[in-house]
Amino acid sequence: MSRIKTVFMDMDDVLTAFSQKVAELLNIEKCFDDDPLFMEYEWIKRLGVRDRVEAFCDEEFWKSLDWTLYGKELLSMVEDIFDKENIYIVTKPMENPGSEAGKIQWIIKHIPHYRFRTFIGGIPKEFLAAPGRLLVDDKEENCERFFKAGGEVILVPHQWNMLRDRKDSVIDYVKLEIRRLLGE
Ligand SMILES: [Mg+2]
Image (cartoon, rainbow, N blue to C red):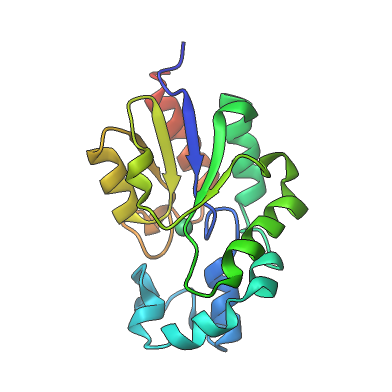
């Protein structure tokens, strides 16, 4: 019997290609991949464009986001291992009040079975942490806090976290980490 009973999947930059779309709208697509500036999770803040980004991250922006390159396969792999009824989507809204509505519309459009399995909230994700609960997230800070609060974590490799060397093999990495957690 698995010691993981519940999985919380992050949404932005794990399922949805949030940063890629923001970069496109800021016309910085070309340098996005190898510019050291984007090695920090808070790259939007560092660029000093937070207000501009907040303004265009309205309902339409969120509901029309693309999947990440690996998002569909990642969710499908997690569903195969843990079953859909044990998986929830957990995501934080931005300040733009259209973000909640747009995010839920994305869910309805792409993964409607998560319509009532999605939590969009401003509270820290570690409030949901407990033994047997796994967070899959690309933000180091979220993973650190969730783990300290007693949960299990898998950091999704991305250029802005410590696993940037694995960013081209997300599925393989996460699969290995799940096997490790399950003691397989
Ligand atoms: Mg994220």
